[in-house]
Image 1 (cartoon, rainbow, N blue to C red):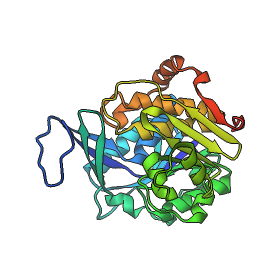
Image 2: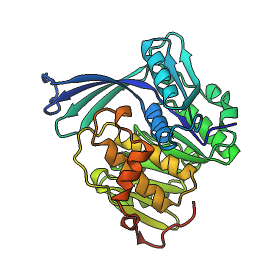
Image 3: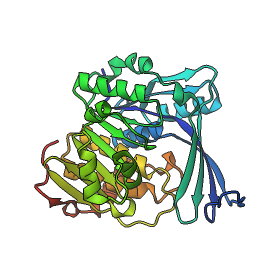
Image 4: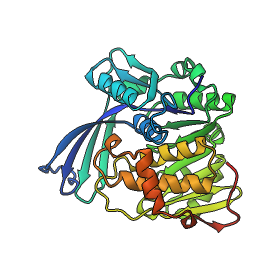
Length: 323
C-alpha cells in the first residue's frame, strides 16, 4: 500500500553560518553562529507534509539516497521519527551524504551551495524499484537536486498510478518538453521561473502564463513576502503571504511545497491549497533552520485562523473550484 504523498528528492546535512551580511567575492567575513541541521529539498518537503498529516505513520514516503556515513544515519533516523517511510532511502557505497553550505544574513536571507554526494546516484532504476510505494498515492513531489532521469521516472510512475505530479523546479535548470508536459503542478519562485521560461523582465501573472505555455497543467509562482500565484487554463488565483518577521528563509520554499502537496492529497481546491501553502511558508521564515522551522498541523491551523480564506482571490477569469 502506498503513501498519500511520495516525495522523490535530496537528503543533505545543512551546515549553516550566520553573518551580518553576505561576503563579497574574495572577502572573508567573521560569522556569529554555526549549526548543523538535517535538510535537503526532498527531506524538507517530506517532513513538511508529514507534520501536517499529524504523525500518521506512512502517510508520506521519501525516495532518495544517502551515504553510508553518520550524516546518512542521522537523516534516516530523523525522518523515521517524523513518521516518514524511509524504506526507499538507500545507502550509496563510496559516496558521502549530500551537504549544503548555507550562509544566513541578519536580514534573514540565505545563500546556499550544495555538494550532492549520494543524491547524484539516485538512478531511474532505483525509483522504478519503489513502484509498490506509489500504488494508491494521491500526490508525487519531486525537485531538481537529483538527476533528471530519476525525476522523469517519478513522473511516469505518478501517471501510471493516477497521482498528481508536482514538480518544484529548483534549483532551476532547463527541462525537456516531455517532462514539462507530464507535470500537473509546476512550483517555482520568480527567479527560477524566469530562467525556466526564458523570460527576463517578465514577472507575476505574465510569467506564470508563459510557464503554463510550456506544458504543465498548472503553475504556482511563489513571490516571497508578496505571496504566491496559481495559474491554470481556467484562471488565476492570487494569495498574499501572512505578514511575519523573517529570521531565516532557508526552509520557507520547502514548507510551501510540503503544505501544497498535503492540501492536494486531501483533495482541497486550489484556492485553499494556495492559502495553506502561503501560511506554512511564512511560518517557516520565522525560525532558524530548514526542518526545525517546519510547522506542525496545530501550528498551521493557528496561523490560518488569522489568515482568512477571502484573501485568496481570482484576479483574472474564474477561480478554479476543482481539485
